[in-house]
Length: 241
Image (tube, rainbow, N blue to C red; front, side, top):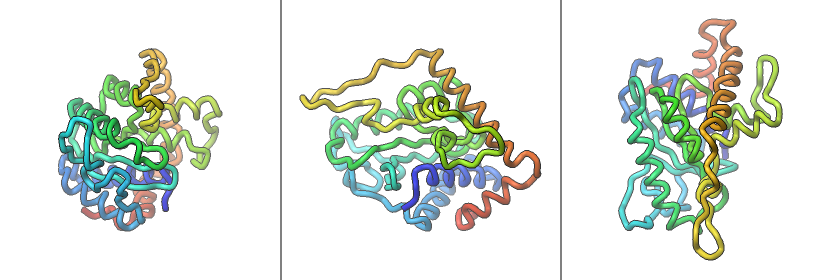
């Protein structure tokens, strides 16, 4: 079973391969890339919430919602929504993803085994405001320009020079948090939402994300084409649509 950070690395590579192939905007082709890669790496759909695409058999509202995928990694169950856009990602897509996963979580959380992480994105760009929104609710954003924050927070990531210190890693990890950290079940059946971080705090964490993402890109800056070669080697079965 792959690690959560390996899963995010591969999804980041798939998004970049999709972009390099000139297929940004073709969401169905991107879903096929991801599905083929998940099957090849053994990330199988899980029945933690009773379904592959529905996340659960019952939502709190009683409405049925479709989710692109749920799968198990070593450290967490992943709820994924794969998007392939040209230009910016519409805010309504992320807000819908947050609302849908909340609706199932509020009914199905008791059946979850281990942390449940929300992952959203692929090709396309996100505005600063949308990044703040995702961070506030612990949703891990995948875009082609920035390395995923949990990957930057991981102690296993190989850096070209200096690496983030322990405090920076903690702040980077905060940007993608499990559902039970942002909507916390209580013994009496009620829910607790931690006090929201201030805009200044989130912007500081996002600035760290930018800084350390740029630092990781330096692994490839010295040799043109090396990133594409690395992507091909990392996901050999996922580069073709």
